[in-house]
Image (tube, rainbow, N blue to C red; front, side, top):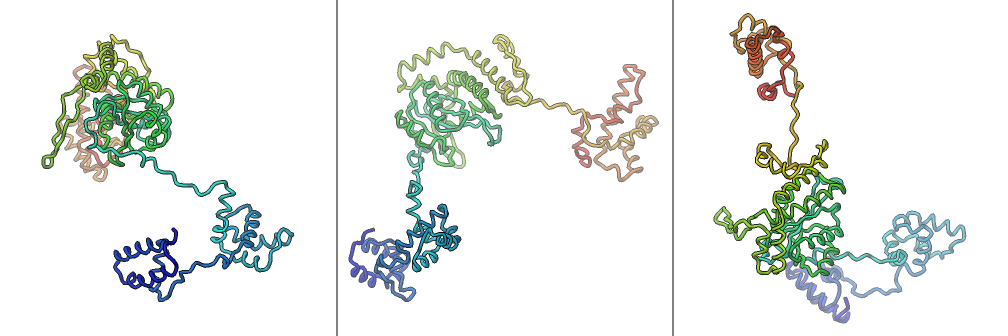
Length: 523
């Protein structure tokens, strides 16, 4: 900063302000300092040093030192440059360590001849001074100076909150990513770029094999051709794939208004967040998808989902909400499809409305649903470790099965869970394995004996082996044995196999109940 007053005037100003500055409060010190910096034209830190000098009981020399009094003159600097080049341009700390040996070696072989004073000053230079003296030399040698920090792209994009949407016309979109990662963000996987029109609720989505800014621009181009209305504005979160120069320049070129939500405020993008769950997750699920084949399958599925949802899936739209005490009351309009909302809006062009009506007339909702189920089956086979064989089902077969689909449970292949395999092996040792023969003998002599009385007899013989939690297991075993004996008597079977095998070797039926009753024999 240039000097605004003479040295004599600055000295007089210092003498007048020092005493006030030393004994002033913190707030008043800041005001005195601001005034002195503005009048004297010096740096703020230097002004603090000048005004606070009397705290140490000494005066500060305010005169600027002459250039001729420098310790390390041009001769020392030239010698340092030669030694630095000879050391292959190493840093100041490393050069300081090798400087004496390097100078002696160069003089011994006749490469340099230094005067005694120059050599003394060169050997006494510190590592920080070496770096400071060589700083301009390094910048010129490297071909560039200190890099200026790039301005953050987020500062170029204005913020839009959830309260700033004031009934926009069709064409203003909220944009977001949906990661098909299967619960793990490591490795490569497909992202879905989803958009929704805030006014009508129209939904579009395209799969992206990579979450990269240039790919996002290509995805927006594809979505722009599919939307029935032109894109007027987009609102994204603070993802680096959105907030970058590529997308900013794209929006400027296309005349699109670009806004972003507040960091960590998902409610600012409530429209697209709701569609992520009700549309993309509903039709795609939560499995992991990666690769070109999965991307093509997703693109084929989205091409039918967009028609089915936008033309034949009514949705509610929030009109207003207000808080009454601890409750929030919301008022919605009647359920309407995005197509009907565009047809009812006065800002939509007449030709666009005519095209929407013609396309809706040609679409068959059941055929679209049939194709969606087929694509979901193909998609589920890609994510499964044991994929099922993809079988083509004709439309007539699909329609005939509709009245009975509710009996099969989940009909979406992307959400269907694998049926658990029936367990046919034991998970813990049978506590009555060695005593079952004795129990059978007691039952043959006393057919009406209860399981509790038999269990008490076992505990008398081995009190450490049998505990209270095993009584329910014995009751179940004896009940099974009696059922088998009763069936054999009714059916007249002569081969009873003495009833030992199905129970003595351990019946695995109802083992889950055994586990609950018998805590001492855990898996």
